[in-house]
Length: 461
Image 1 (cartoon, rainbow, N blue to C red):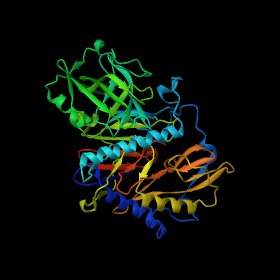
Image 2 (cartoon, rainbow, N blue to C red):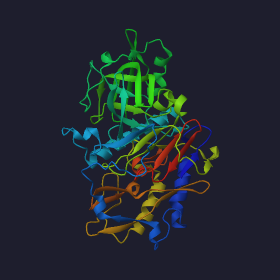
Image 3 (cartoon, rainbow, N blue to C red):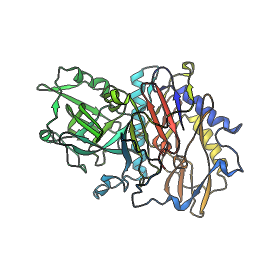
């Protein structure tokens, strides 16, 4: 069963005070009630972690339970895991934990800065970020990204794209790479061999729409529209803005899909061919396919790099449950988003301090381990075969409860460094972010037309 959350009449917008209030209920009041950590004796209020389960498999487990089999679905995989087609590129080594968190901090700072500047003194922010696409776990663009495989052109060229709820424009590297192209696993898309490719003209409405999607004014090369987009870690893509046939599945083919044909692309894309934008701008994939899917999509991020998740476009059969209205009166300045590209959830400082204090109290029987970058609550489980981990739940107004799965509670470096997978913002006015570690195995549902966000348990496990 999925719980649908109705933030306000403005779709997918939360402000800081509403989310801070929610976290305050969940975590701060847990010291007095049983909201966040329920019970101390009953095993039903703890996750049992078997230490041998921390060992990542070197083989791909393609039999993930709960995987959507609707015709409009794509597989989602971790970019650096054995299920990923990029995994075969031995020249690409996965980032270290330190590199992952460094890139994650860059993405967080970029998102917080961009949304604060975009909304001025009042930070209304987008929660950004039926076709089933499998979803694979990847590592700003660059931190914790997942990839899907789609087809572009006629004949169809299969390409591995990072999917990102925080981005709007879709782009891929294109021949002849007039500027620079980074090394990618797939052969680059060549528009000259596609019978359905066409450039967008400079004076078209579509060209003018790039400003809202990318934040940059489009340029013109002769009569062709030129796009440019940049990400929080200074990765960027520029090239020709074009129309092409997009094939998601054999049943889901779209002509005249607007995308970027990248001629100068640099950054931490890890061998992927480009990026699939799932934001809310009119150039995003959900918006361009709205006639068929009504701007509804969902995804489930796999539990590990050796598992498979999904990205589904269109109405989800599991959507249901209680709808929850959040009054506009609780909205204030900082804001909160759900983001598929941020690895670790960022909480307001006071909320995180309360969570950390209570978690440490419940875990006091276990030996503390070394801190890991932004993660300051870590444990050494090397002498145990199994341990009990307190369950953490998010409580929304109206009594709606979302329990975070075990894989979303901990970040594992190794058996002697297993950390609470939450971090504090540096300031109470900073945007709160619900990251992809906490989203693992949940079905996260976006209803753009209805202005709702939903969560379903055991989406892929």
